[in-house]
Image (cartoon, rainbow over all chains, first blue to last red; front, side, top):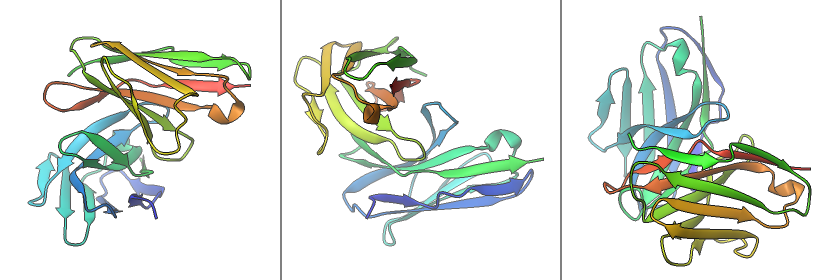
Length: 111
Length: 114
């Protein structure tokens, strides 16, 4: 079983739609979680950290449920520029010591 | 934010040759750098953790004699793929850890072995 599992998608949504991605993790030693965004043939870029209390950054909302070992990302009012692969990432060892990446969920936003 | 560069951005080589990839932190010192590999439609996989002035720590299944890592200074780590074969073709990405324990990723190096 993969340590971090995501639905690969693709999610094809129209502009303005709300889309939700889910992720599960199996390593209970994972201490911190993040969502990264990766464009085609580019390096991953940090989108946001994920907390149990939930956190919001503009149109993006992330949530962590440690009991269920489940992480979510909600994108509201999708833009064309949101088209990318979204990577769910767990960190072991505190902070950014060792990152475990999911395979990513592809999002395609169309006009 | 902090900047990490990689060189070259892409490389094509013949089977059996060795390829060196450089990872540099441009505006900060990084005692720890990480090397990842990503095959198409797969996740980034950590290959090794590179610590300045000491031997790298390799992940299970990664051959240390094939993937040589040198972290000779606080701003430079190199990964050498020795005797490269077509199955080594991949996207190699480094990251550098800054003072606030944040990882900054380089732009990646696309290696194609013919």
